[in-house]
Length: 340
Image (cartoon, rainbow, N blue to C red; front, top):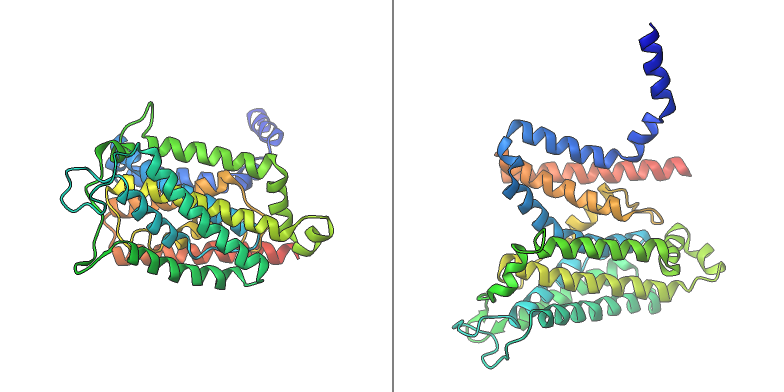
């Protein structure tokens, strides 16, 4: 009896229920890893876990851009196509000199930073365009970015179109560029880039006036305006930053896959939005954390990899992912209704 009382007293000192509620997403991720690892021990092999991290690194960078927009009550459907276009641009600038099907025959030997910066610049311009259309023309984000999604796909198709052959995949990338997926001081460079990007985005959201303004706009745009927040300017900035991140992700994806086509990045925007919602970013705006976004992406990638390792049919994988997305949004809506 005395032992039972001591256990209850010890538990009483800690808010166990509060801890579980606060870290639910992280606990789900850990349980998912333990479950799949128990059923299929191969899942926990170092090379498989490293592979998950490498794939997640690109997705995290995309989700950070999409998450910042969701916090303002917006949405960006052009993310995947921007990633595809910028992947094509980066890949075309870093092809091997001896590759027979080079896009630019007389291209000089660029340092790997040049194609990355070029991809980020193009992404930034597209994000700036989206932000200006939304802020100045008052076009709903869904419609504005839907139009951009279609237009950017057209641009990427034109970019890699080489008559009379038509749109051709861009391959033959230099090994120093593709090695970003495999080498690094401790982890592969792509993973390190994702970690640094997440940290910088965390600083922006939590330690700057701009970040606080984004939460204020997402909470209530009218109240934010009354409080002196320039809503239009901040929306332009958040879409521009998102475009910059999509460009970075495009270059990272080209390095990871070693090639790019006009269909690269297709559907990535939906996965990013879903990961953000699973990670606690509210579709009603004003709520979301970097830790939640990163964890949401990791849950998605562990789930994807786990279903493959478990031998689940591709069709069932899509059904399961769709059900999870619906459930996450339903929970978010219930939270919003409860607050009202």
